[in-house]
Image (tube, rainbow, N blue to C red; front, side):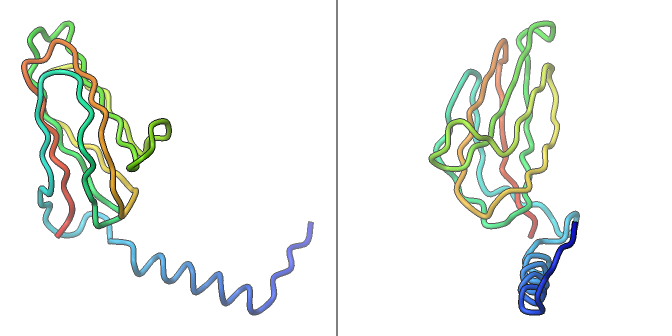
Length: 128
């Protein structure tokens, strides 16, 4: 198989890759700042929130009523979407953990599933 690329196509590809790499935030640099917090103890669909970057994270904390039967799930969807999520979490104990998301910038919402929890907290964080 032979692939033929014209100089103009090559220049366009290089410009696109360069633009993406210079606009993408360097992973792991900068301090994290909470831009939105959600709390609850049961199932919940959150309101939409805006993430201004293409690399962000959710920090979640759960407190179980019963560790043996605790369940916590998070599905992060682009605004208006109900089937294709950009990230998900399953957590089955009390504690805190972090999930990194590489989607955006844009508006998102979260579907939270919770069972046998006293409380849960989700913080949406971006690097500053």
